[in-house]
Image (cartoon, rainbow, N blue to C red; front, side, top):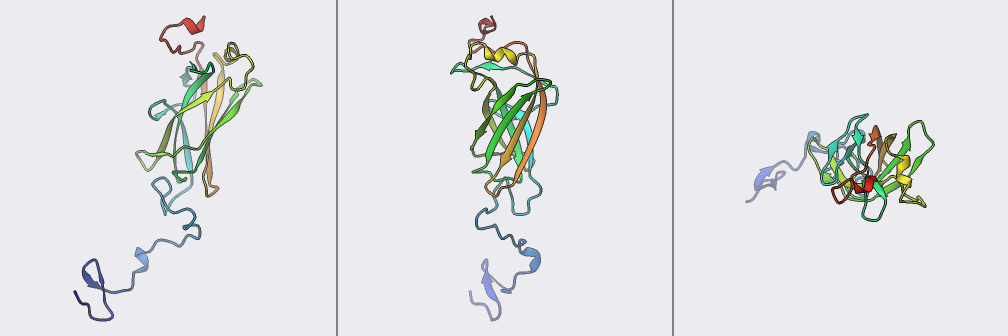
Length: 190
């Protein structure tokens, strides 16, 4: 195909070499170091994070929802945390989980993860299967979890991406009075 000047060949057609401003993305000086991705598109809004739960997928939780601690394979006691976010980088983002007992002095040491988020519905991305150990750092793992049974905690998830954008969300949850035992019995509650 041959086009007559000033036209040029674009997608096997003769067209003007000028691109209308409406077709150009807004200039972003950080594009080269943080190009758009499925979690943080070029025309992104404010960062958003939503706290959830789930070992194998994301499930929403509500304030006041009861969650059960589980006896883990290394002897610690954890809950499963999941999160949804948007307008933050898919890869290289640090997801930090913290918790504080409401009306108490117990603060759970934070856990941080640098895992890549998966695409989710509604322009969100999700991360699940985050094992948050409540008795982390305890000298007596056999009994330290008991201080959390039946307590209400503020569970916070914060995501910080490589562009230094950040967002966080907190849910107030109640911990059940019993554990989930790995063998399916109640033996770990005795």
